[in-house]
View 1 (tube, rainbow, N blue to C red):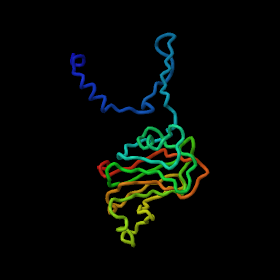
View 2 (view 1 turned 45 degrees about the vertical axis):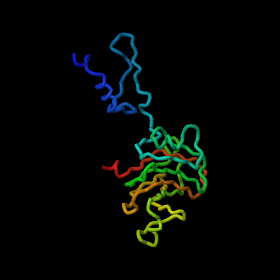
View 3 (view 1 turned 180 degrees about the vertical axis):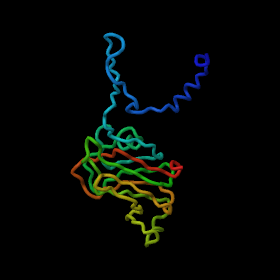
View 4 (view 1 turned 180 degrees about the horizontal axis):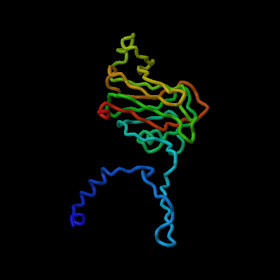
Length: 205
């Protein structure tokens, strides 16, 4: 009785926390039904496919790409976890910029380039750099051993041979207003970012 008469908000609230998995955790096995002559083609279309990107919830930011994207594979959609970023032939000086709406304390970062279908479309000779709210000159002169760029960014990581850049940002850097990926040499391949994860102090609690 309660199920039929319960308020509508119960269903709405339940939908907000309902967990959806792609592909489904459980799959229908077999195609024959217990009903004579009936065929059950219930296989999840996503089942058995290798994921081409891995979504994350990232801090709110304005994103700008100096690398021209291919079709709908934009950096903004990749940052929001909707797809992967696919850019055409990175050149020296190209940058992928994440300008945070509010400065944040970044705890760690993880970027993965390339994917299962295009493993060679990686970012090569590319560094991860952050722009702190505090004057970057405060970190110069061996005060913290930080590697500074000429325009005031601190180099906190770089992409390795596997196309991955990951690391922990030193707490002493403080709040960060911009994170960017800076390309230092032209590439013979397109570039894919299949995973973007910037974890701030609030998310790590």
